Amino acid sequence: MTSYIEPLAQESTPSIIADKLRLAIGHGELKPGMQLGEADLARKLGVSRGPLREGMQRLTQEGLLVSIRNRGLFVIDMTPEDVRDMYLAREAIERAAALQIILRGDHEAAGTALAAIADRMTGADGDPAAVGELDIEFHELLVRLACSPRLSRMHQTSITETRMCIHALEETYLATDARAVEHLRLAEAIRTGDAALTEQLLIAHMDDAVQRLVNR
Image 1: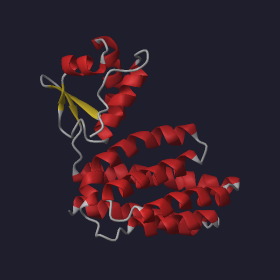
Image 2: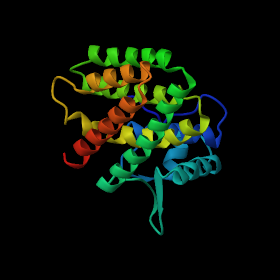
Image 3: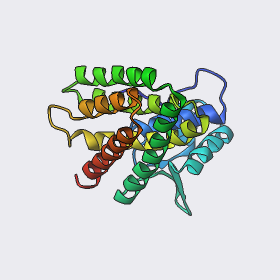
Image 4: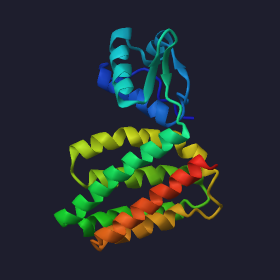
């Protein structure tokens, strides 16, 4: 298993530390509900406690960590209500991104690039973990192609929370993974510049994920 809690290869900054911790949370190395120990993390990252506290404070502000009085700092635990709220935010961000792509006239190239990822998902059928990573890659690219730094910044936290849910989602899919087909349809709707269909497919895609997670 890849470890994201390891000595930093470059000068330590709160931003780099926050990125490392965000990856560790998203990939399950720091698990939901887990308490974080400053001394242990500082040792593993090879940093002093000052920058570490600043990095952890950034993730607290993002909502990925929570401080409990007289107990310490913990990774959030995704309740059904949290899952619904997270996908509500993701849906709003990704619908805005897709509309921006279409309005800018970049939809044909964007749709082609997104379809290429969906094709790789088809090739990874039978490997839920690989399909899950490509799923994330698809949606990160979708928002990035909108060329909006603020949308991308807002999307970052919800994508980390999505990664936290990936393993729970994997077991809800059959051997023939439906996600590749869903993403191909979405990519084609974007490619053709069909804003109404794109919105419809994004809403259905998010609703399906929520239902799988909260009813598993």
